Length: 400
Image 1: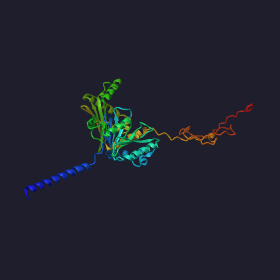
Image 2: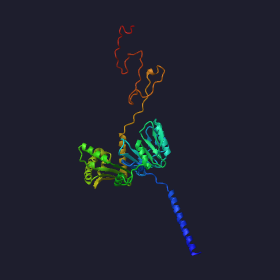
Image 3: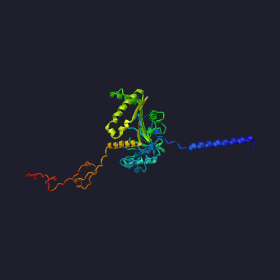
Image 4: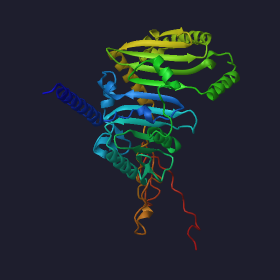
């Protein structure tokens, strides 16, 4: 074989191998499933508050697992699994909550990602709306399908798309969340103000960040001035956040960002004084929070004020349980079921059924005594045995 022919065959073989390898790599790249959407990708930019929860980490923590494993119920309908046939929360991995900086009071949005059963979730939501006497309406919003109660506009809406995420909100903010998830408007991203405070807080299974807009800071300054605290260091706060990191110990780290060093130092001194006063409070100590507050370290570092404390998993679990129990005790008891009105003597006189309902029903602890019919021996002493003298009939009584 000539040298030229041999070299040509070698080059051809190398080319085939390179081409095949490149095609294999491209094929592998195309087969790689796209990354699951993050919950934060659906939170519109400009939020006042952003909170995130890492559900697998919380489920694995002895301090929080029991709360996530509890059977969830829909008030008035029963357990979620019985109503829907499945528990939508069980397969979720991440939750984010956003509150817009500008909007109507009470506006908020919730985003959940994970293994989402879109159609089953919409069917469950429709079933709940119908069970409560509403009219479910399914519509399309961008790449999402949404269901709402048309008889109660503004009460909230749930939207979902194949692969997630699930969106829960209302009105204009839900549509802004859809636009953020579809990429039509900016979302809370890695370069925003929330990311600055999130980096200062650090990684955590639960994290909350708050960023004040210039307008909100100006309003805060005016409120402080009107209350006689115009020189308060609180006027210098730009952002704040807190994170909870899980492990053998539960680490809580809070951060406040100021616009200058001196206000952070002054604010730290005020917070330490408040910590000491609250830690000595009897009610705080009774629930076990006093000992935790005493261990909170508060230190100013430049334009950042840090508060740190660590708890054992057992201590954190007991504290969370006590706080949740107190919250449950403060909830008002549900009103008693309305009792049917007892039939009156004159209800049956015309042969018609007595009206039903709670009209005239006595309170639950009232003692119901039957109405006494007029009897021929009227004038007999009452049941308590106290006799009253009979009235003497007048001579003209009953005269025509």
